Image (tube, rainbow, N blue to C red; front, side, top):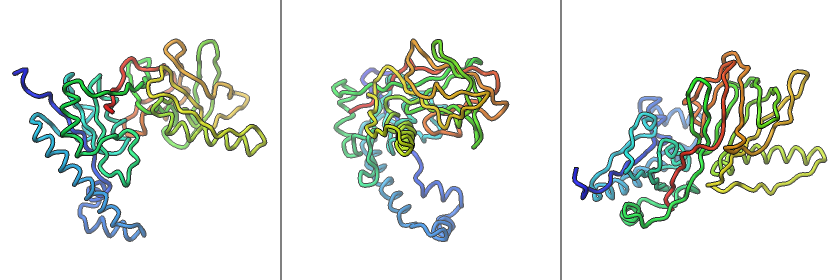
Length: 310
């Protein structure tokens, strides 16, 4: 292959809500009937789909001018083989960027906001129209990027899972999670609704809601109420864990409910759940690891880091 060829660009896309519901109900007419029958605004589904389609057209035109590119739906990421020289572009919400990052190993990722009026786009600093200018700069190494710390869980059977925002460890349904938890010399048995281990990127997401709720409850009960939650830096070398709804009893404790996790002090959990324990990352519940009784999980920062172009 000639070294003069441009670097390959991988465009990661996702289906819109309209596409999802049409796939479920087979036709646009049936999808419209279902949504309107429930009292929702079907026009909003249409507007979102039209905006995404328009952004996709602009993005594809830029990539066609570039020359070497390939489009991949987010559902195929787990089995897609990226090359080390690839440049990756994600067109979608922040969640698509996070979901894509955990399948990369040092490749730069550009986040494109398909509809700024709808999506805040913390991880989407560019629009489709910017691609013609930004892409050559990335390929030439003239564009800055931010390092993203990821979380990793390793199971005693050898399986691993990365998380860009967070990892959830707990029950598959609305039941109690039973497990032993250990960090350093501290250890106890817990019963809870599961725990979250968040990265710096995820410290503004699920973890923030858990901490905010806990602080509000403490304030309502007369304790110190603090609302100044300080998120971590995206490249922070440590993670933060929080146990959801810990239940103290004769057989369970609730002391190790919040803290930092780093490479020197990983979080170690051993499942006591016969068959309903799971671990998933970044809200992708369908893509999970089983966490049955006896299985040990070691959680800490991943050696691999993401690169988000800014």
